[in-house]
Amino acid sequence: MTDRGQEALSLSEDTIRIGPSAMHWDGGKLIVCINELSTPYAQHLSGRVVVRPSALTDVELPLTGDGSHIWRPFAPSADIDVMLNRPGWQWRGHGYFDANFGTRALEADFSYWTWGRFPLSTGAACFYDAVRRDGPNLSTAIGFTHDGQAQVMQMPPKAPLRRPFWLVKRETRADAGYCPEQVKVLLDAPFYTRSVVRTRINGEETTGVHEALDLNRFASNWLMPMLAVRVPRRTRWPGQNLFPAPRPSI
Image (cartoon, rainbow, N blue to C red):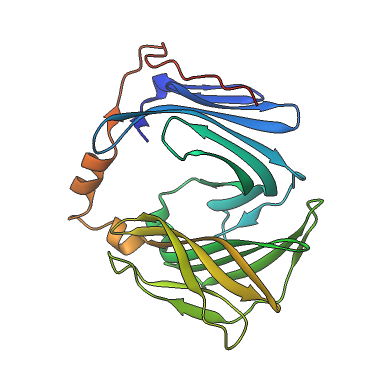
């Protein structure tokens, strides 16, 4: 991932391009073309991820009272094909596509949040728990059917998860008496964790994606220099693809 200047951004009705990488809607599927240098060793990462949603939603969840932050679950359930230029990074499976939008910095409005998305036999369940800096905390559970219909679902109680290496606080939602557990680490950073978690929702055991975000840590003075090392910045963009990505047929 690279922070880039405005020159690197181009946007149309069905395509967004940032530097040498892009996302493009092609009929009923989203094609993500990745073409970047990864940190900390500047390795070339390229390839494609193709997302085939079972349905698209028009749901938007305001995360703050004034709508300064919005969560948009475009496709809560999808099939995906991953083809990247690393050993073992070619597979097909189950996934989703969502995004967050905001008009203020996250750390200005939140001190902490957890989010989880878990597949169910009926579709998927998503949980948002956020500690706002101004106003009541957010706790929301939304269920999605396979055809994209959304409805507020009964909120299971909170359940703690073991802290990872960087000791970020973690909790998720689970049926009373069930102890959720981490199945796989996806990202462990001083202010953010993403992992595969097994839990039980309304009697159904499920494995999904979970994240925890500590924005007090993120906003701290000691962390910002670390981000500058981990996330390179390119303020200028020459308008050409320096590393042509392979175009696997899917």
